[in-house]
Image 1 (cartoon, helix red, strand yellow):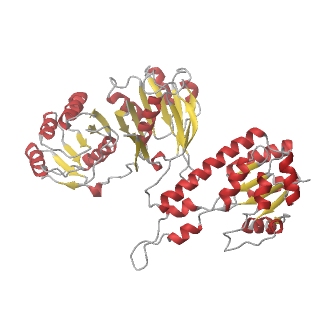
Image 2 (image 1 turned 30 degrees about the horizontal axis):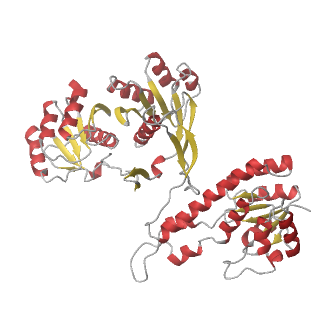
Amino acid sequence: MNKRALLSVSDKRGLLDLAEALQKKGFELIATGGTQKMLQENGMKVTPIESITGFPEAFSGRVKTMHPKIMGGLLFRRDSAEDKKQAKELGIEPIDMAVVNLYPFEQTAERGSSPPAGEAGTRGVTRAEQIELIDIGGPTLLRSAAKNHAHVTVVCDPADYERVIQEIEQAGDTSPALRAELAAKVFLRTAAYDAAIAKTLSDGMHTGVLMTGKKALRYGENPHQSGAYYEVYQPAPKEGELSGWKMHQGKELSYLNLLDADAAWNLVHEFTEPTAACIKHANPSGVASHRKIEEAFQRAYDSDRLSAFGVIIAVNHQFTKDIAQKIVDQKIFTEVVIAPSYEAGALEILKQKPNIRALELWGNINQFQVLRNALGGILVQDQDTKVVIEDDLKVVTKKKPTGEQIKDLLFAWKVVKHAKSNAIVFAKDKVTVGIGCGQTSRVDSTWIAAKRAGERAKGAVMASDAFFPFPDSIEEAAKHGIAAIIQPGGSMRDAEVFAKADELGIAMVVTGVRAFRH
């Protein structure tokens, strides 16, 4: 008896190649509605599901696959004499493969609900439309086939078609290992799907985060702690938002390596101009922008060489051979280097320092929400993707910043967003010259930034991630020659702070937005 495959998909990418490969190997193709039509239009022989169930689609497609001859064909155990006997008595024939993907509920839910009748609002989708995109038969087919993966191949993701085709062409069937892997993926997919439905129908009151791809790390925050890395499962990433990373060389990653790498990549990703950042303990020690990425790297490193020991280095443009050579020649002790790509030959140079972990990242990790555990639960927030531009700035002092100072103020603002609060950044010519962060008082952070900057503070600008509660930080900045300041504003003592800046001859602008990072 020929093997049989049930095909019922909403996402038809790659389906023809899979169907042709199955048919060449003698599989009978069973299909539903739109899938059947597509295959037949491409000259393929297809068995309509109604000819097996003896029952037409009903209720506008709400009922079409939920039938004992379909569920039984997927679920009966081929190695059970009793199951085989009962299947024969009931006229149930085996279905050996289920290729199913689900109605696009997540994508439609992201558009939001339309407002109730009579209320103003942007057209999204109505709750009734959302409910019609809750797939019932699809998850049932997938779970049934996955439960019986010892005998049935189940495929829920077009990305897996090629592997199935290869095994079918080579052996006439899939391997137990692949069937088990695909079955596990099905339960992950249906769990994510149900979580998305629960989140939507509860208006965000209930949510779920699924993780996959566990990777053991060298250790956790300290060597006596274990650590692991999981990817957040994304069943249907938006077009152009696929992201990921790989490691080209180096020692096994630790928990802190990944925390620092995340901080470094988030920072340089703020910039379109070639930018490099040195990161220590998830805080920037030096950041620089320049038309040449090699010069940006050198300036970022030179900004604070004392702190740049065991540093994480990130660049937002291709990592060149020149940067690699600078690291080797200057004997820079770096734990991790990060870039969106590597110039031919750059990795060969880095091999002279085999312990350096060279990571390649692509895509926008800012698309992911920030998750942190607290008090036995999970805190969730959006990434801080707010971009402040010159038009957003309000000058609050008699002295106005120059055009060059505006550029430096906006540069410093992007950096201060990525330093732990309380955070102060001194910058000049798009290079940080002093950074103070993680202090319990803002004036202490200002003092630390000034100590790091030394004489370089004269004529530099200063960024503060939150408002100044007192004028003391302005007085400290003035002692070291700061010429202009950017800060959110909004303090009860704003008038006093602005007046102090006027008194000391410092230009000041406010953004109207805060940039805390705890």
